[in-house]
Length: 332
Image 1 (tube, one colour):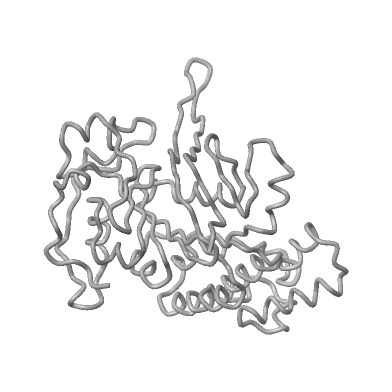
Image 2 (image 1 turned 120 degrees about the vertical axis):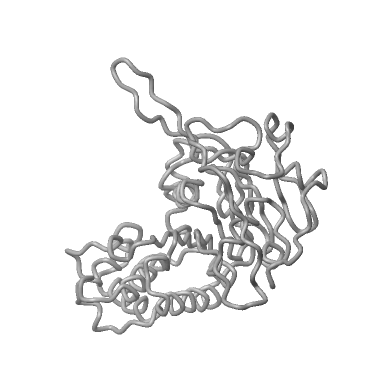
C-alpha cells in the first residue's frame, strides 16, 4: 500500500522566555524529521522524555502546524495558514491521549462526549447522533446504558475505551495514540492493546503509536522510529530493531527494557551524562556526548539517515563499520 502520511524535514520551533531586557530563546522540539507511514500499518515512535514524540503527535493531528518542512496526510499537503486543508483533515486524523482521567470532560455524560465531534463536523440529526454514539460504545466493548453515565463512574480502562470510541466517531483513517496504555494497570493494558488491534483490522485504521515502553511496542508495531533530541536516528521494521539494533542509542534503550524471557537478556548499556538541552544542542551528532563510539567527525558533522539493509540509521559509526556486532541480540 502507498503512504498515507509523508513527512519531509519537519521542524517545530518554539519561542520561549524573553522579557523586557532579554531576548526569547528558540527551542527546536522537532528537527528535520523525515518519514512515511503506509496505509494500514502501525508506526511506533519511541525515545526518552524530551525527544519530541508528543510534539510530533500534535503536528500529525494538526493541533500544531509545522514551523518548517512538508507534511502530507491522505494526499493533502499541509501549508501554514491553510485552514481549509486543516478542516478537511479533521475527520481523517484523530488522537487518543495518554491520561484517560484527564481526556474526558467530567461534567458531560458519555453520550454527549461521543456526540460532540458529530455535532461540530456533521449534519446528523439528534437521533442519528445517538445511534452512532451507541454503536461506538459497542465497538469498544461497552454497553448502551453507559451512554447516560458520567466519566467518574468508570474505571481507567473503561475511560480509555470511551476515549477510543470518541476518536473513531468521525470514521478516521489515522489514529495517533499518544502513550495510550502507560497510565493503566498491566492487566488492563493488554485488553486495550487487543481492542486497538481488533479495531485496526476491522476498520482498516493506520496507527502512529507514541510510546516509551519498548516491550509494548514490540507486540503492536510494524515499524519503529527512534527519536533523540528531536531527530529520528533509526527507522526499521520491528523485527530488525529487536534482532539487530544499529544505532548506539537504540541499543541502550533496548538493553534497559526488562526481559520476560531468559533468551531475551542482553548486556546492560549504561549511557553517561544527561540528555542535552534542546536550547543548546551539541554540534555534530546530538548523541555524541553520550556515545562511546563518537569520534571527531561525530562531534563536528551531523549524520543523515542512510540505508543499511531494512534499516535507516543516522550514525557515522555504522556507516564506517566502527560499531561492534552485538554478541547476543534480542530474540525476535
